[in-house]
Image 1 (tube, rainbow, N blue to C red):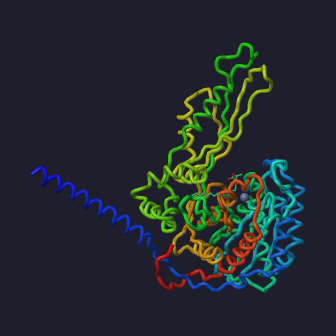
Image 2: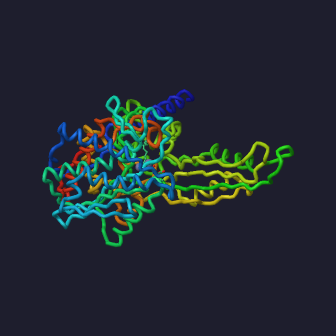
Image 3: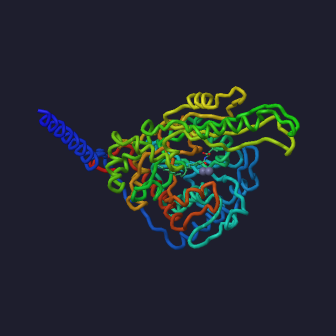
Length: 510
Ligand SMILES: CCCCCCCC/C=C\CCCCCCCC(=O)N[C@@H](CC(C)C)C(=O)O
Ligand SMILES: [Zn+2]
Ligand SMILES: [Zn+2]
């Protein structure tokens, strides 16, 4: 009898195992199935750049890099360089500045807004954004001078080659080439070039967005800087994947202050302001914010590209219902993937002390949190207070905003589809996936103008290149720059698609 029962249990377990494995395999090899509306795309013209055009483009970027448009802080920018940059683009892109189709305005002295008037006024306009300011660079740590625009081994080096002068030059150069070829857009579009993105964009993009809102402009979609085409960044993902930022994380910057008792270092207080503050920031770093994998759009990103993972990770990614815990733990291991799954905590400034034998009265620290889409500023603040648990540490909010709304990214979404189609054709069939942009962009000021904001940088980035952004030896290959221009060249033409998509056939596609 016992043997019979034992056999029944074994059989049931075996049955369950077979069922489990079948579900995994079915979901892996038939899912995700998404009925994709196929649109009638017109073939954009002039995909290949001529040698002369390539040369013009490379020189245009090098010249832009040589103008040190550095933003140090909101009140400290290289305004001479910002003004020079305005004159520079006017010289390098004469057709953009003289075309009868285009109007040009300057905001906040150094930001530029262009409107390219299309022929079909029934189509809602769209907008391309980029910025001309850059973060500072420490020349002594670079292999080449950061503002020399030097070319080495097929790369152009310099601050801004990735963030964001490449996109700025790419957009204007694509438009310049199109105008030269006699192209006239159907759909109107705006180009916004902010001059203070790196220091919050209050005088550039924010003012431009407010003015467009006053003019009652509504945008079909907006494309700004953001996530790249990642290559080799997620282990096991065996092809380049374009990440389209459909939302961006919120941000909270806190100043922590401890006022202690100052005095002679020969009879120090039992607890100094530095000691109390150090313990507080250490607690914040040692206790990361909760892992939120699966509660925001990051889960859809992995599902979109599940089939591109190597075996057996393809099975794991297609079955996050079963494996999300293990995947989230795995993603927490590296800084770039960790940023996707939780609110991050970055200790960025620590200040105290003036002399080795003086116990300082005050210690301050700045902590910057990037808020996961499933959390809010308020929730993060509550966790911070509970984690520090020390009344002697005063908290003050320097700036904060909640995560941005999630833009539409379904088969009916005109902007997303235009972007996805353009990426597919320019990046040799690379799949794209909706994702959370971990940094903040000027595009957040345009939320009142459109529900469809996409943050995408049309450049392939490898793991070893990630730290070049805002880091040392920032560079772009000449090939990548050409591809970036082709991207905008095609995007502008693809955006002329009719506002009502024509159903063609349904298929299964990423
Ligand atoms: C699944 C893991 C994929 C991880 C991919 C990570 C790729 C990271 C590459 C680029 C980072 C995105 C950068 C987006 C633009 C950020 C621009 C910026 O620096 N903005 C400032 C704004 C601030 C208000 C001054 C910022 O600090 O965020
Ligand atoms: Zn940028
Ligand atoms: Zn930046």
